[in-house]
Amino acid sequence: MNIHANDGISQSGVDALADFGFTLTTTNVAQEQLVNYINENNIAGILVRSATTVRKELIDACPGLKLIGRGGVGMDNIDVAYAREKGLHVINTPAASSSSVAELVFAHLFGAVRFLYDSNRNMPLDGETKFKALKKAYAGGTELRGKTLGVIGFGRIGQATAKIALGLGMDVAAYDPFMDEATVAVDFFNGQSVDINIKTRSFDDVLAQSDFVTLHVPAQDKPTIGAAEMAKMKKGAGLINAARGGVVDEQALVNALESKQLSFAALDTFVNEPTPAVKLLMHPSISLTPHIGAATNEAQDRIGTELAQQIKDLLG
Ligand code: NAD
Image (tube, rainbow, N blue to C red; front, side, top):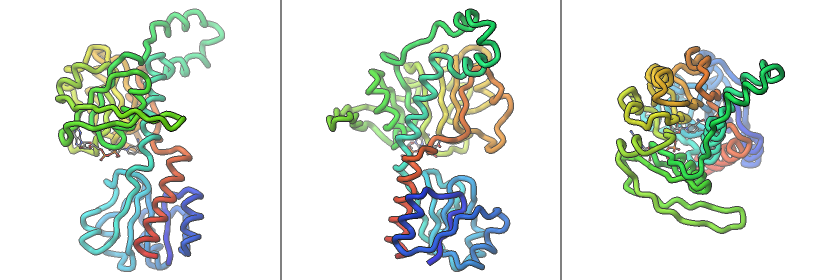
């Protein structure tokens, strides 16, 4: 049976699918040629990440398709309900990348409280001639220990983020309208583990009490954090969006940074991917990554093997 991975798949996934007897192709086919490719090559399963879209028109035009697989979490690039109505399997790998996204949040956070995003821009230019001025400019950093991390959306990634925060000695203020509490297991290298129960707080309390707010909600129709919510945050707080473009109002964010209501932001996801707004890219108070939350070797390995296992269970 033929499987086509249009946005790539890890070697572990390639190996597992081969072991299970599937024939895999991994050439990236342009979106407008995908229907022809699927039909001409008798593809039974199409695997995508976030780049390729699998809409109703493609599903209707490819009657041989039995399965759509998303390597990762959000399935906003797939017409999931329609595909399932038509009898197709639609699968994803919801848990595989949680730790990787959580670690990226902390990469941004550690960097932001010591101004690394700006220092890394200016040291190559001025480090040799204005070392002392830069040293002064980047003094006044803060520690994370003892601070409060607000987590909006307390699902898999929100809780993975909380684990790191708790391990660092931070308080976690979580908001999730669908959850009253969660027990987060903080795991140590030697097998020890400490369970910490976290009761969710009201949205306004989380905004008011947090030194940094990180978003882990699904894609939304309107921003979860807009101007009104930013105004409710602590003055000088930081905001991180590694969820989906649009869950933060980007213009309101620029305004809040300009007025110093917020001191920094970190963005991994953007409204206009893959062409984010230049005013964000050029902003001196924003730490930036190009949607790489799940892009670690470990997460991609887990995604590949989890997809292969599910494909074997459903089609093998
Ligand atoms: P999840 O479904 O496990 O958790 C989402 C949580 O958000 C749920 O507990 C839900 O109850 C809660 N929620 C829904 N609406 C909410 C609202 N309006 N306010 C507060 N909470 C709300 O999902 P997850 O695996 O934790 O993923 C979270 C987000 O991370 C998704 O948007 C996903 O697309 C994104 N993501 C980003 C990357 C990346 O590369 N940056 C990688 C993977 C996932």
